[in-house]
Amino acid sequence: MPQNGSTPARLDAVIVGAGFAGLYMLLRLRNAGFSARVIEAGDGVGGTWYWNRYPGARCDIESLQYQYGFNDELPREWTWSEKYATQPEILAYINYVADKYDLRRDIQFDTRVTSASFDERTDRWAVQTDRGDEFSARFCIMATGCLSAAKVPDIPGLERYEGEWYHTGAWPHEGVDFSGKTVGVIGTGSSAIQSIPVIAQQAKHLTVFQRTANFSMPANNGPLDEDYRAKMTTDYTSIRKAARNSPAGILGRPMSDKSVLEASEEERNREFEARWEIGGLGLGGAFNDVGLNLEANAIAAEFVRSKIRAIVKDPETAELLCPRDYPFGTKRLCVDTGYYATFNRDNVKLVNIKGNPIEEITPRGLRTGNAEYEFDAIVFATGFDAMTGALLKIDIRGRDGLTLREKWEHGPRTYLGLQVAGFPNLFTITGPGSPSVLSNMIVSIEQHVDWIFDCLSYLREHELSTIEASREAEDRWVDHVNEIASHTLFPMANSWYIGANIPGKPRVFMPYIGGVGNYAQKCQHIADNGYDGFELDSGRVAVAAG
Image (cartoon, rainbow, N blue to C red; front, side, top):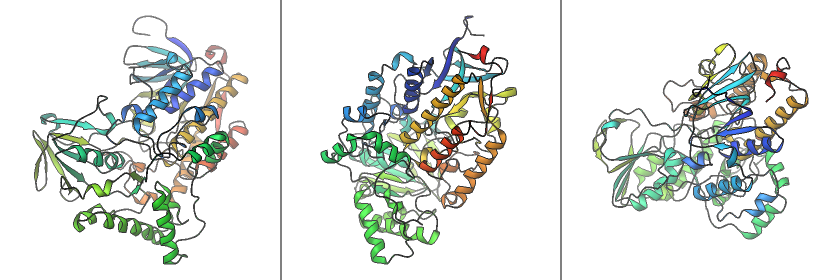
């Protein structure tokens, strides 16, 4: 029962999270007459762009493609200033959308969902929050994001540290001024690669602690070309349709149909150089076997290492920055502005902690296996408990009281990344088992939201109470996701794609690597065939009607 003794608020859907996914899901449901409420932990909309306010934060997908595409109106109304938009600009865009469609009136801010339990007697979800709210909803839709559960490493002594410390994924909204300070940054992933050049310009001295070097491509950012903007916004619906049918949800220089092993050295260098000059994530598509063949991959990797050596003046530092422990592109490729050149600055030092890990945080800094360091501030750029972390923070219980944590004890299992067997009417937007983090997230978000909306409309039209992935379909899909991944080089890296950054987390390759367009076709085919692989039931529709 509700803590205040009142009856739980009855809704068609509770949506958890007010980022791109939650806002679009709310818009679609509300416009069709479904009652829906978004529950958001922050005090504003934005999701990952609300929390990630670290210096230098910006998108690694071109701004003209990293925006909503559900109509032609929005792209013409909003004007992006740069090729790769910064966090403040993206957050301003999301707020603009929320205001344009008056979405805030159905969002409850400063509230965390703590539990969600499926009641088999009524076919409804009982959702509880940290503020004592209780909701009774036919559908529970998780729009919690793939990279939203910040991970601070379990290093002894942090509670004794006398300076200031920050995590890039939970940055103070008022910002941080590092002027005149000695700063330590732990980690060299995407957020570190974006923030390190900016922090280095402010700090008196910056020490970067690197366990594993990362491949990073230059953004080659700049103001948007007006002709290109006009071309992209004239018929954005068609552009988004094409993106949905592409391998990664991104339009640009297409993947070559030629093997790097068949190309001459001159051809290789010409194609690699062209993509390096364009900037962004396209270098992996220079040849069609870079992600599949180790010999081909090694050629691409060495090209990037040659670029690092050309940029970084100190040979020893350059070699430390050259990734060698995993194939190119099998960890998240990063996009940077001046990252490698930052290590040419006199006030920046790189420390390799692979052989001498950080042993403790001291009151004035930290200690590795062979040295002690003092800092005014420490920045943890240590990433997230990706794909599953935000979901497992909530006590989610399905049939027979089975918790999602128990269900995923040996790794996440879903059907299409949309549903979990044993958890009726629970949907996960861009969940594990979908392209999600291997794609343009907004393209994948829109495809998932549209599919869920069509599904809920189908249930309403046919007076059906529940939809639930069958265990057989879930097993087949998990096997398919693993099989596709096994044909690539991705499983060879200890990446957050397989949960390797979280001690004790099962090592399972979580995203679907079969391509955005191919995946969307599979989803549509399943829906067109009466939701093949799902179990639909009308047993309690009269009770469940919300």
